[in-house]
Length: 121
Image 1 (cartoon, rainbow, N blue to C red):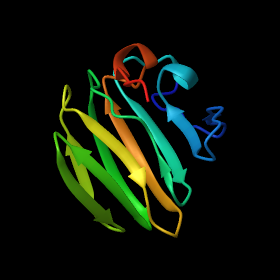
Image 2 (cartoon, rainbow, N blue to C red):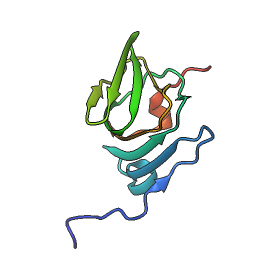
Image 3 (tube, one colour):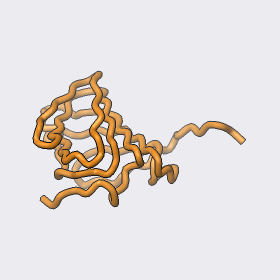
């Protein structure tokens, strides 16, 4: 039995906001509840509702910029920067800029709609 798994077919999460989400490891692809790893591209002028997730989320910016509002504080990351946002922080993710933002997101435990607690718009 192999001690590794190469992901060649990430799950593309259906979205209605133009954001690309390719989950490489996590609940949707490998049934892993401990961690999720996703490659994402947020289009210009994209945003999500505020949320208060029950997981830590790490984000590494590959290209472009991404805005985070974390417990009322606005943080902007650029390519080559990363951030860890601790679980239960009130956070909004957005790309209010004119260029797409490409990034990797890692959640521990794995991302789940049951754990994200998005606010109504």
